[in-house]
Structure formats: C-alpha cells, structure tokens
Length: 206
Image (cartoon, rainbow, N blue to C red; front, side):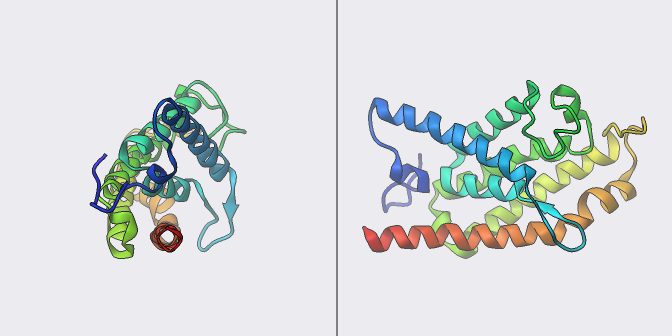
C-alpha cells in the first residue's frame, strides 16, 4: 500500500504481523469488520429529524482505519453475507435478506458503501487519516457520492412494498436523503476526529 513516508499509512497496517500470520490477520480484520457493520446496522440512535443507525459510521471508520483494499474487501464481504441471506442489514428482520433486498429503497446506498470504502480507504493509504481536515474532506466526498447513488436508485428503480417501482425524485429526497443529512454530517465529524486522535496516541507511545 502507498505510504506517507512515516511508516504504514493505514492504521490497521500498524497492527498486522509479517509472513503467514499477516494473511490470518487480514482475514480476521475482514470478519471483524463485517460483524461491526452488521451490529452497527441494528443500532438506532435517537436523533432529529429521524433516528439514525450507525451503519455508515462503521463503514467510514473501517475505511479510514483499514485502507482501500482491506476496506473494500470488508464491505464486499458484508454485502455478500446479506446477498446469501444472512440478516446483516438494518431491516432484516422483519424483511428477509437476499438478492431481493437489494431491489428495495436501500439498494443504492448499500452499493455506495463500496465507494466510501474505496475513497476514504485511498485517503488513508495516502496518510490522510492522520489529518482531521483531509480525512473529513475525503469522507464528505465519499458520503455525498454514496447518497447520490442511493438517491438515484431510490428515485428511479427501487421496488417499494406497495408494488410501486421508482417513486420519483421528490419522494426519494423526502424519505431517503433529507432526513439523514444531519446524521451523516455528525458521523463524518466523529470519524474525522477519532481516527487522527488514535494516530496521535500511537505516535506518543511509539
């Protein structure tokens, strides 16, 4: 992975051993990451104007800590778990996981998680996870792309429970984007503050 000249660029890289044990460590990190995202998807925090889940917060944090390749692998593994029917998504249960779940209103947002993993992970590869402004900017860009993907899918292609397909832009904005903007901004701020703080603690202990 690219480095910023001061050692391993991604936070997780500082804890991975060398040799065969490294491969085991990578597998464990991926599994731990998918578990963290699944747990975060089930947690609903009271917020205005609607409660928020911690799912995107987990994806952002993993991307900032893992770097691009490991973060993308983790998110793809998480989505694959849901694709084969494991109840790892926010609304499973009562909804059933599996291929049909991706056709629903959240399908575009879920695929957009890969964008967050790549864009924020790439920033971490370049050492931006040590800088609050740079990390915040990277997460903001990635989150906007993810939300745009989710909005486009919701508006034009989502299969709703009433049988409607593609409810339109106004409906998708009102129910799929606008209520979550403040929550997303808060998540961006939390990750942008937390990950550089961890780097600071590691630096002081080194």
